[in-house]
Length: 252
Ligand code: IPE
Ligand code: IPE
Ligand code: MG
Image 1: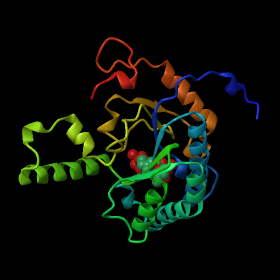
Image 2: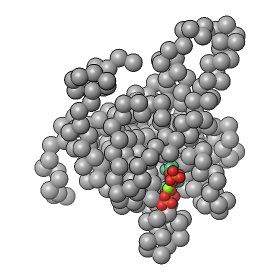
Image 3: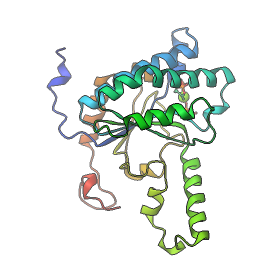
Image 4: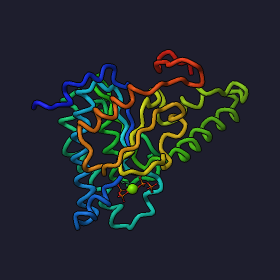
């Protein structure tokens, strides 16, 4: 469909875009709907944005779907969020696979419901050789929890003599996080007008460009993504130096 924004060149897209999908509840409340309706509508946005990210040439898309702190919500809402994830994997995996999407899940696998773990493993196994967009779902994810688990693994290796304490560097830590092998996000978008990370990718976000948009997640569109990319491309990334650099020029 013809669209005025199609005419805008957005040249190089960021390699990795991460999104804090926030505002489902408020979106529903404003319409007099139950929060569940907001989460359902949020899943439609997920499908739309996965397609849009692919079209924009983004290689990695990370979506924050459930945090380690979200367990503190009412039991019913937690159950609904679990069901939506299960339904998404059951109903939409085939299409993602067909579109060459590689699915990866980050977050703590040890504290998720028994019926979800195998579903996630199967989804990853099915799509592991796909070479299109890598879609990373952050589920039961918290940055502090991820760093804690990485520290535990590293400490065990040091105790076993597999690793020396003074050999631990930034790369060692990155390689022990759930995101090992995935480049750091170039841009992190948060919807709903909140300006915080809420325990999302705190190690990886060291030099990410942060973009906060006012719309609620169910209202976020392909054009919103395009606008964020245009904003990203107007930013000057210096990584502590004096010149604008592209991520690939930055050594870890
Ligand atoms: C984001 O929407 C989805 C999750 C955190 C699972 P919210 O449910 O946080 O919506 P608000 O912030 O209450 O509007
Ligand atoms: C962050 O949103 C988590 C997800 C989007 C999954 P929250 O709604 O949980 O964050 P806070 O509570 O407003 O910080
Ligand atoms: Mg919220």
